[in-house]
Image (cartoon, rainbow, N blue to C red; front, side, top):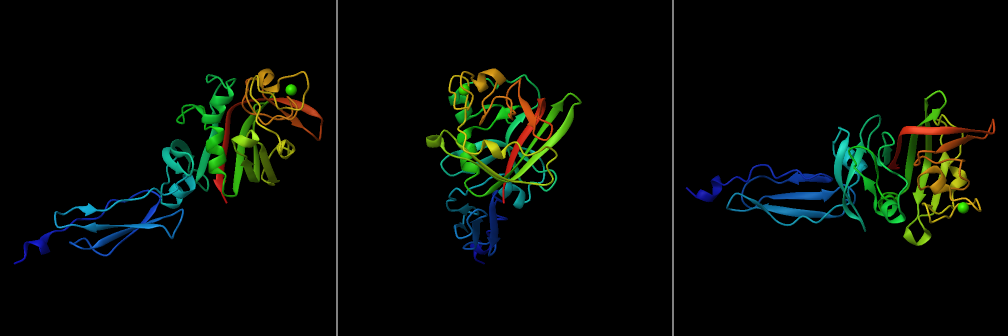
Length: 264
Ligand SMILES: [Ca+2]
């Protein structure tokens, strides 16, 4: 009896963000891994006579939406992989309809958001608690058309509000991460205050692109943002606030806040 016929490689390993099809588990059988992000891109592993699967796997693009589509249902910190950025640990929100990549999460005022341009660019904090993912990662995550949901608390009253837009795209470093936002959604519970910030570069303390002369909005509110005027709308600083156009009133904003995106 031929010994090799007894060799069985067992099930090939599952890899996140990949579909797997197997022709069998015996010598010479193949396992084909196809990227969820690019269905034409696949790699093959072969069962060898030493009982192991052999062959290389190229990297697939992988965000929280890909993970959700691949069956990951539990919210938490996951490694994602983005073109031009590489691997990054990100908090994925799999609640509601799932697949959200969290860009900002501020549970309290313990993490200092009044930080430098380089910190805002590359990210700071801890994705398992309060953090800012970084403008470069935001740019990479929103290369495909993406929606955004922002949640925040409004004072006085401590009521939670939601702003939801079907289009959100901060540009790259060459535009100072200039914002494009559109598609105010009717499930928002606050009036549209974010669309107006389209075209604004990202300001941080000492690097002032806002529209208020003589004032550094990032310094004043205590956090970077795509400011037009200082009080109109921002979510990062300890003194962040939001305008209510219909009553011409300003309100304080407080944590917990979340900004999350998902490919459409
Ligand atoms: Ca200014």
